[in-house]
Every structure is written in C-alpha cells, then in structure tokens.
Length: 362
Image 1 (cartoon, one colour):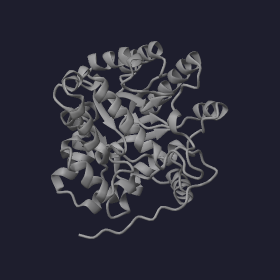
Image 2 (cartoon, rainbow, N blue to C red; image 1 turned 45 degrees about the vertical axis):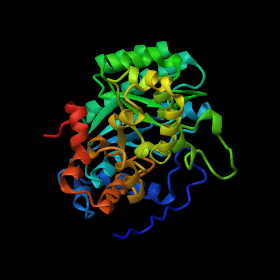
Image 3 (tube, one colour; image 1 turned 120 degrees about the vertical axis):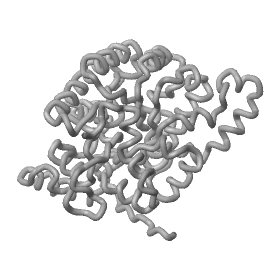
Image 4 (cartoon, rainbow, N blue to C red; image 1 turned 90 degrees about the horizontal axis):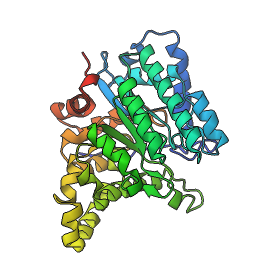
C-alpha cells in the first residue's frame, strides 16, 4: 500500500501562533459560510466521495470562538482564535458528514492571570455554548470550559456545567503556566471529576516553559504535541492517573508524541523500582490503553500505525480541529488507512456514543 504525501500550504503569518489556519482553508470556509445562508442544511453532504447524505460522525475536537471571548483574548495578548462563525461551522460539519460536534473553547482558554475575570468569562463561554446547543439541539454538545488554574472556581464551574447545563463533559488544557494536570494543586478538581466519572477532553496549549525557542517555529509545530505528552507523563508519574481511574480522558491529536516516546516512559518506570508500584500499580501501559485518543491532525497512516500498535480501536474517536482544520481532512485520513468497516464505524461514532450515550444519533 502506498500513500501520497500531504502538502500543507504555509500558514497565514497574520494568524495567531496557536495552530495557525491556512489561507486556502479560510477561503474555503468563507465560501461555505456564504453558501450555507441559501442552501438547506445537509446540502454540502451531497458532494465529496467520503461525505454522506445522512451525517453520522461525532466530532469531539471542535472549537468555537465567540466574539466576546476573542476580544478578551486579544486584549490579553493571547491571540483570538481563527476566524469563526456559526454558519461556517455548520457548513463544514455538513461537508464532512459530521452529525454532532462537541464544543470546546479555543486555547488558551479563559484564564488571563485574573481569577475573577476567568470565572466570569468561563461562565459566559459556557452559556454561549448552551445557547448554540439550544438553537441546534441535534448538532452540538458541550465540553464545559473551566477557569483553570483556579481550582475553587473550576469546581463551581464543573457543578454549573454538568448539573445545570447538562454538559457532555469537561474541556481542559495540557498545562497552566508551568503546571501540568498531575500537579498536586489540581487534585481537588481531579477528585471531583473522578467522582462524577466525567469525560475530560484535553487540548494542548502554548506551554510557558517552551515558547519561541527557535525563530520561525511556532508552538503548534512541535510544542503542542509535546505538551500533550508532558501532561500524560505528569498524570502517570504523579500517580494521579491510577488514583482517579474513573476519569475518561480524551487526548488530542492521537496522543501527540506519546506513542513515539512511550518506550522512554517504560524505561523510567523500570528505573523507579518499588516506587513505580506505588504510583503505577498496574503499570503505565495499562493506563495509556484505557485513555481515549482523537484523530485531529493525528490521522496520517504513520500516526495511525504508531497509535494502534499501543491501543485498541475501541479507544479512538473522530476529531477535526475545526476551525483550524476541516472535518474532511480527518475523513480523508481514515480513507487512506483503510480501516475495516466495523472499526471505521467505531471511530466515527460508535466509541463516542459508548462513553457519552446521550450523543447517540437516531
């Protein structure tokens, strides 16, 4: 089996550093947004060899960027996300055969070094997502945004998001400042998520430790995938992964660089001797096999091969990374790997429906 190399155009230099959109893609989105104003829902699903007339895919990596959030992010010097609109969102979903997308806020989230501002902004973001879901109840789910690293505020927002808004899970980022998710200061948050048996979707962000290390190479090129690996290591070797076994973690981008570096995790575990049994009583491989992984920007044949040597198909979910990537990019990646039909159905919707049954498509 041979595969053609993907050619990705240069990123728009005027975009933010976080996963910059491509000029070509933004142009396509603008065109689809305009078309969606005059065409009925689902019209785009009639084109494209991999699109389907009745959408069935569930997208667990789908961003939104409300205008008020983008304004505050820009004011804080934290970018403001890619150009985004409801019309373009629905158009891309229809084109990619996505029946439902679970909304998560664009990195770096809502904390700009002010706890009270972060709490207010997270609440506004979550209410906005709930309004999107109310307007299009069959098309959207919600991952509750938290004002992390403010643990107290995050506990309040978990309660509001899960109990009042009936969110499908919680959205977090790989790091907050120089703290990764296994940090002891986050224990109250993880304990509550574990109590609730929550689904927790984790997206990488620009880590404070490692920004602008090389001229011309932004964080999205290397550091995003690596920060996912850092935070997985943090959970494993702090013991948090084993202490909170009922959290259902979803990792972005097919686990980042973790599948390639896992042999080093095992070597570290071996070197720890008796201490390893205390923090990883069932071993690191046991833990990573029970995590979930989504396919956005992790869907080339080489990436799939590495991930699926470690974990079963039952742990893989469909993700697009919209608006930074179109859903069809992942569809084409799935096409190229030539999954058998039952595995393809599991990735596209079956696995998501199993862990979040409320998303099930009739």
